[in-house]
Amino acid sequence: MEPVRLNKYLSQQGIASRREADRLIQGGLVKVNGKTIQEMGVKIDPEKDKVEVDHFQMKSKKNYVTIALNKPKGYVCSMKKTKLDPNIVTDLVDLPERIYPVGRLDKETTGLLLLTNDGTLVNQIIHPSSESEKEYEVTFNTPIPMGAIKKLESGVKLNGEKTLPTRVKKTGPAKIRIILKEGKNRQVRRICQKVGFPVKSLKRIRIKSLKLGSLKQGEWRQLSEEEIGELKG
Ligand code: URA
Image 1 (cartoon, rainbow, N blue to C red):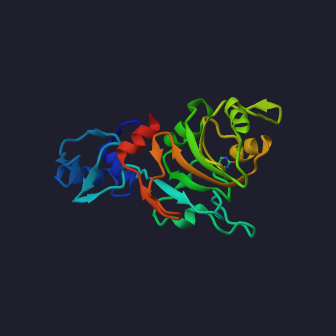
Image 2 (image 1 turned 90 degrees about the vertical axis):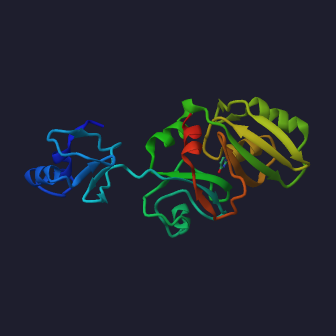
Image 3 (image 1 turned 30 degrees about the horizontal axis):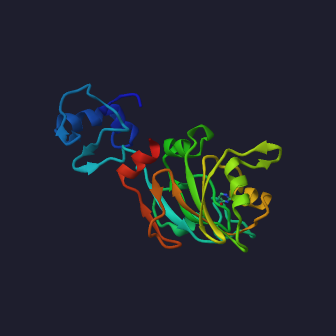
């Protein structure tokens, strides 16, 4: 963001006219990053610098929030309720910031969903070029043979287009873990159906380095700076 003169910034924030802002500054009432600024003409970066007037911090820095939610069944990743889908994922999160789901999980899918107001994070995760790994736990109604697993691993044709190869681990007779690097609509359900094994239940357990861990369905937690850094990396 462009640096802006401190008096202009204060007037843009509705604190004072520019002339009054100059008086506040000269009077020693304005601090930038904890240091009192009394000289005129100092520029600040509204995104990075912390400005306080008479001890009240201004809302200069955008408050980025990113949370991990364990999405329960029956909730949709939409910002708008409809008659058909009155349960939306943001209803589960009580925060003052307006946050949005990063990508989608189907209504019937459970597990790890990120919600954020940080646009750069969204791009890093859902842009196809990011090839972010997403891992799912899939259960079937009947045992799945190795032949079907091999087909899933080598990629499956959907609407004439082959999906990328996947990594699959068999974790039970009717249970697998599958890692995708792309996010076509209802991809796991469609590729499993295509190889003859409709999905009984689907849960996302990881996005890049972030694991669902011990969050229970409907629970959420705020991510640490470190976790967000890893997701952006
Ligand atoms: N693949 C699906 O089929 N559904 C999801 O919710 C996510 C991936």
